[in-house]
Length: 165
Image (cartoon, rainbow, N blue to C red; front, top):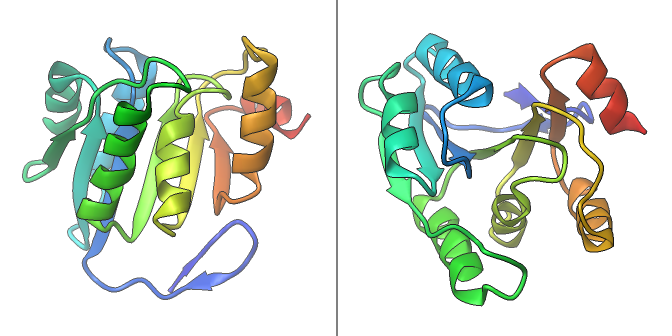
């Protein structure tokens, strides 16, 4: 049994199908952190990387042999219905036990979180920095999405404190 942030136990079968989402198109600290994490997971995890850039997915997967890759088109905005639907379909098709969305900053990866919510997949998000929302819509969207997350983590005390505000 896995315990989520609310203290609720989740019955998770073994192997655990973990899907990690990356919307980044460049290699940096977030991608290196995920690669390190994946390289240290034990064998009870079957990992799939879901993302928008094949080179990034391949580089991150190098730390964990056997990692599957799934490419989705980048979402160019809230009106990009085809790309958003592709994210939802990918999560549905992969049927993960847990979806982990890597967020470059607090207002990134909304469509991965939405795909987890629509497919009723327990979803956690990891924020790597705090930035103000670029648009008022982001604050509204994330306010609605965050309440459905099983956990929101930050990579530092500063990020965690910023996310709590």
